[in-house]
Image 1 (cartoon, rainbow, N blue to C red):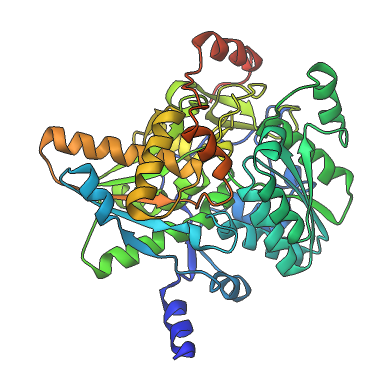
Image 2 (tube, rainbow, N blue to C red; image 1 turned 60 degrees about the vertical axis):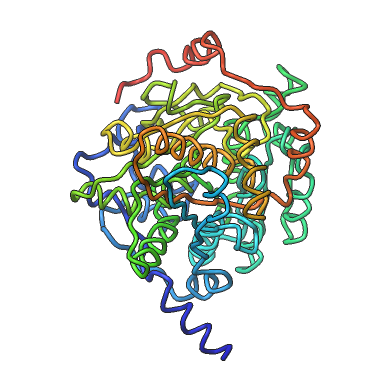
Length: 454
């Protein structure tokens, strides 16, 4: 019987990732070399990423085969469950059917292993021995730590300082899987030392942590590389296993969503659930696809589409994306995985084309939605996931006001069992609403004045 379960699971897992670049109605603007202003070539990325991942980053092939060694690791938790939230539906008392893809079933508790395992595999195959990375709330750092342990790689993680302090159990997870976790900004890199010299009490940001991780990887020499958990094309592509699985599962029960929702920080889990459905939309399907972001870091809803660096120290290429400016340091909200100044170029491009929508939510609104979810469906969501649930609540309210039935699918990107300090703060009334002031946005955007225009 156990063998039969494994075989059935294996049949459910997609054997290929989906690359939406093959179906774009208009091509994306290329990343630019900050020195020459010309499009970045594979050779420019070689000191940072292994060539096998660079090939995926620039690929125009629609389907990329998933190697058997990666599928074997995916079988630890994939296919992830597709569930209907009937109790939450009753609470909302609206004409909606709510389905969710539960990515909290992975060993690391979030969607992040969907790309961490492929990235570790491809680095190992290329001969890399150590990977450096950054992490916001710790989901990515813990996922890559686990993946590196599976493939025998060393792992060094620069964790945004405020999350390092807020979420000690994420650090403990990384350490248990054998990784080194360093609070960022740190004294380990020139980028970190510069920030500390100017702002000794800096809470850190993903932009700062990325600078440290890239610098550390390049300094590590021939057998050291950098890994990113969101934003880039190959990362978003790996995550499409979520949406592809969801489509197969929904097809079995003859259901197709009217609305698809995901929370959005750098864009990976939103891309994962949405890109296969964007393909459907490009080919004529009628549906809405919504990215939910924090009001304290409203990249898509209040930032311009522009070329900008992905990090504070300007070590990455210039990326065409919605941005708040690379030196913007977000407020220390508890949804640390959504505290990023930019948005994935793929997501940004699709938003500009009108194939996606964006909405922002205050942290009190999101925690209210998350607590209601926990008290009806039982699962305590990650603070990031709460943004998607808040968007579901908003869509249910809209359906009720319009008197129209809707089927909603959202990505439950991770559970919140190591984020309980955030819930403790919310339940104790210590969290406050925060809307990013316009003057702060204008200040931060001065950093990209004079950059090339997409």
